[in-house]
Amino acid sequence: MKGMVFTEFIDMVEQRFSPELMDEVIEAAAPPNGGAYTAVGQYDHHELVKMVVELSARTGVAIPDLVRTFGEYLFGRFHQGYPHLFEGMGSAFQMLSSIESIIHPEVRKLYPDARPPHFDIGGDGVNTLEMTYRSDRHFGDLAEGLIRACIEHFDERIALAREDLVDAPGSVIRFVLTRQNA
Ligand code: HEM
Image (cartoon, rainbow, N blue to C red; front, side):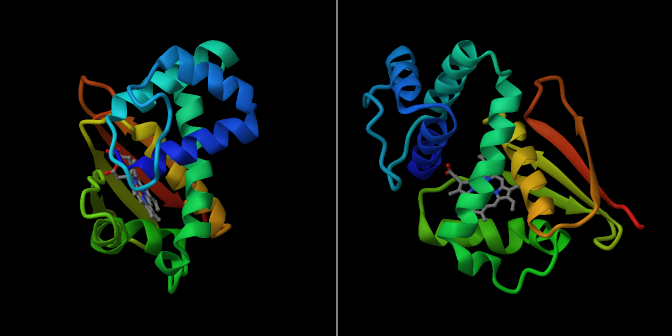
């Protein structure tokens, strides 16, 4: 997984909790590089999972909640760091339906070694949008946080439903977004 995801996670924990807690988490998770992540590096995503587990153990916040919150935080950071990816995006449906066609392909241009997840996009795109997430990394909670933050970013009234589709929870998830008309 791209290092920028790790560096953003560490920044979030330092801001929302404390640098001391982040140090403890790194010590307990004991990643091979001792926590010296760089944004352009490439690391085993299990290292991130381990840090989340240790953070959860120390804060009492459930793992899915931490990952979802991280997704929300990450969306804001993407907005700050990659404003060109938001240009011309007028709605949450427009942005989310372009993940496969525009956003993650652009990410691959920036970081050729990036391996973003796969989304199948469906629905009518006007009142409903369906996004089926597939990834062997089981980061559906991250996807949920990113989707929620995207809806919030455009300040739209959209309900989000989630259904885990296969036995291995988190590897295939259908998100159904429904526009709420006044
Ligand atoms: C708008 C909604 C978005 C959603 C729902 C989304 C979803 C995700 C998820 C769930 C992952 C984790 C990897 C996995 O599950 O296998 C991921 C990875 C990633 N995404 Fe997105 N993403 C969004 C937008 C963006 C934007 C705007 C950027 C801009 C830079 C971006 C850049 C990345 C990068 C760099 C990775 C790491 C890929 C890797 O580790 O190889 N994403 N995305």
